Length: 395
Image (cartoon, rainbow, N blue to C red; front, side, top):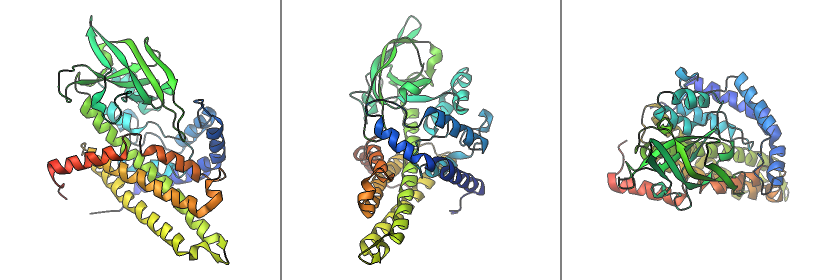
């Protein structure tokens, strides 16, 4: 067993850490103000011109295509390094993402065929196109197998009809990956197909958005007789469920990495405040309650870090079935950050709940993370179901 990070991964991690300190954290006051002022609109929290400038800066220092295969123009540094990158980026609340996002990259790499590589995978890998996953529906959230959106074969075309709900980045995406029911009589493994749907396709509308707690602002997507060619089928007809399930595991790993970064930022703030703030003639660092908050937070962060790095390492070794591990890190990460930021707010008192600090912003953001990509209760059920069916995994 070797717990040492590869030298190249450490170098990337340190580069991202400097980027965050110099380029992201100085903009946090702007982000807090924009999030507070946007109200019910879907105005981007990060100004588009700032996002473009940050992308240019990141690219100039080599932060590009971290987990993109070399054959597609990337660095192919793997999932472990990408997790390190995400963790460091979330030392800041600035919602900056290095393209491409790993979950859809993972899916497109596995399923794109023929000219789909040039039309979707390559421009997505280069950060030239954005995408989203249209999976959830009004009656199908955590239970993805309950989706009702239909794709029917008529006159050599596919006709998609249905409504998707809670779709992040729908209006800012150049194309969507849409999951639809193609064979209701087949079992779960053969009933669903993924489709590539371009922005502006006739019949595709995004009529409604949903202001939510924190920075999240998802959309409703309506498909009304959306006509697609066979070239828009992603993967095999009827073979969409398993790849999408694996893709969700990657997203859950990414969320856990975000939780690591946010929690570490909170802990750093707690330590500094405890050593500098005095009450009743003594520093907060002398108070047992404060010491326990810091000790517990550190332990929980380190335990999650081991789980996240291990899951990422397993994926880099070719282990594609990470559904149980994805549920594990999702539950532990989102619940851990909830506890850590609550302790940090309590330590800072009135300043902790003010918009002078990023803590109240983090507390609202992490509340949503316990629901998106599957609530904690469903993931506990997934973990238990796997263990009850298959027993404990071998070491």
